[in-house]
Image 1 (tube, rainbow, N blue to C red):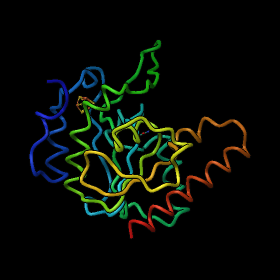
Image 2 (cartoon, protein in one colour):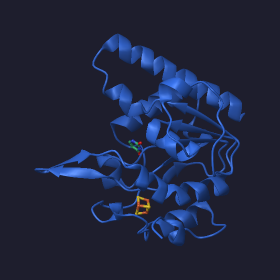
Image 3 (tube, protein in one colour):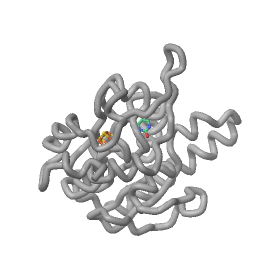
Image 4 (tube, rainbow, N blue to C red):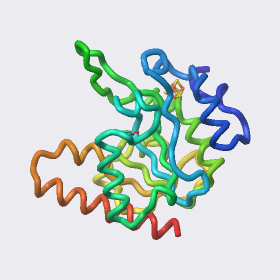
Length: 207
Ligand code: URA
Ligand code: SF4
């Protein structure tokens, strides 16, 4: 059976999960990536943030959200009064998916099959961390956390019930890289304000 399940140790803490993830062959994405990118932040956090997948920077460094999208996220967390210690930060898919174009590597969205294959890692992380609430950033993360297709614009700001994860509440919000793609300054400012407001609401709900 495809998927990460057979590489995920049972009843493991975050450290053991991270170590085991280096051997994962649950889908083909490990083949071309530099390394697995597992998670960052506090394993005892009440708030878990889930992104899409590591990007080019994360693939090289081996840590989530260290590139431009990570900077957007870090600034928004600061603005929302949330410290790095208050969150556990991970991705729906743990290996970088890209298309080579000359010497460049162009980010490609993971497919639903990749999201499903990688889901056992997220499941194990939730069991290890036991957050009060998950924030899914972007549609790919929301697909993994809620176990169904989600349109962010339609469901953001509403408390949602995760599927197949040991946590009762989730919110969906924009992905920080969607802010980077906005060319219009007013639009970008408004999107950033909404993103910060979502993070602040999530922190309040998580306690
Ligand atoms: N985007 C993500 O979704 N995750 C990362 O780790 C970096 C960029
Ligand atoms: Fe395993 Fe996920 Fe990497 Fe696929 S993306 S090889 S399922 S860790």
